[in-house]
Length: 207
Image (cartoon, rainbow, N blue to C red; front, side, top):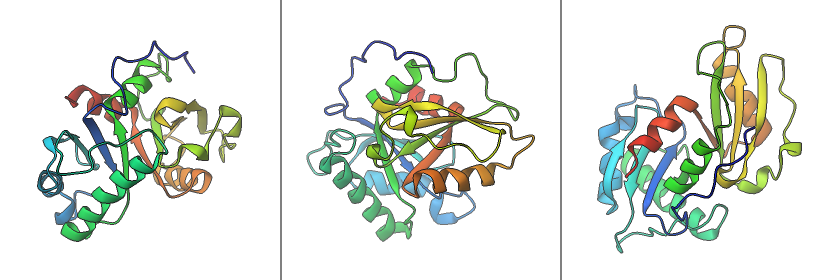
């Protein structure tokens, strides 16, 4: 894994720009469509609410005093409270209870700047995934990473500042749902996974 880039100018404890990574979102469910997801965040008092593709990625600015906007540091009670606050609203308004994982712009920027996949490009043979841990303590170091179930998946490492595990899978020889099941078994159900392409698109759209 490439060495991290110099520290970002953004401070994750004060940066008002966030992305809510929602678990279990399928656009086939009318209550999980982007316009309804955005409406929940708008009703909570967040600003600059926008969505990125249809896999449950809602970006927003949280500088309103009407909501618990200080997401705090990774693993902090403040972060857990902010995630729970959003999840409760999603459950009440839309019946969505899959889980919410928050990452600040600074945290995602740090991950992208680290260039963990090097020169690899996302394709069926090199399916680049970032798995975000709700609990950063689930993995403390790369040595804690489990062994993948087969040679079709490679764990590249763990990025501490964003609490993300990076993996590459050859989906010409393995099924993506099987990889997701293994990731949950390895790191628990309090995770959410995005393709690297989606991660970079999220960051590019964040204010």
